[in-house]
Amino acid sequence: MNRGVNIAICDDNNGICTELKKHLMNNYNFKIEVVKLYNNGRQLINDITLFQMNFDLIYMDIHMPVLNGIETAMYIRKFSNSKYPLIIFMSIYDVYAEEITSSYPYYFLKKPFSYDLFDSITASALHNLKSQDLICFNNSKTYLAIDPRDLIFVRSTGRKTLFYEADSSNCINITLKSAEKTLCNDYSFFIRINNTYIINIFYVKSYTENHLILKDGLSLSVSRKYREILKSALSKNISMN
Image (tube, rainbow, N blue to C red):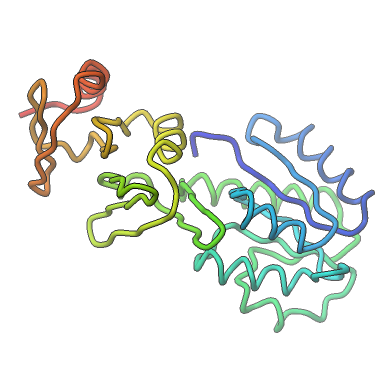
């Protein structure tokens, strides 16, 4: 994962939230992009659905007001249709094994827990995220997690953007500019080539100054403003036939 990890801590105990955040920032600062704190599940869901926050790892208390941890996790799983973000449940009670199973938890931490155990689980989760290297997009209705290596190109259709993989395509209601900010800033092999397309240069079959052909045969024009950037990226990353 090229960017840092986005972490949420959701617990109605402010002291636990603050203590865990401090520990994470002191010990994993080089791996973390942001740690956000929430006192109930509704706050967390609002940030995910209304403000498009993409979390990779969530520490989730079970007993909380407004919306408890299990309800929150089930909503997140329904929204994401994925085992990501990773969810680590926390509770003083250990009777929830059957209830939390359907939300695909990464681990259950029984309170109070030692920092040795917390660090062991956190290190395992970070390793899992690094090995998966998923990139996530979401709006208020859709959550999309994609392995960037499998993404061939992205195409704008106005207010919506299509993400094309070898065996599937997914549409999400975000702008191409928003997709470009995430893809091109985090991964050097994604290059915007015109007003409609962002391509993965590892899927380029051939290229001329103003035109390229992808390995699936798709032919695309390259706008003047993007030609030098594309040429430089191709020369560094792939060997043209």
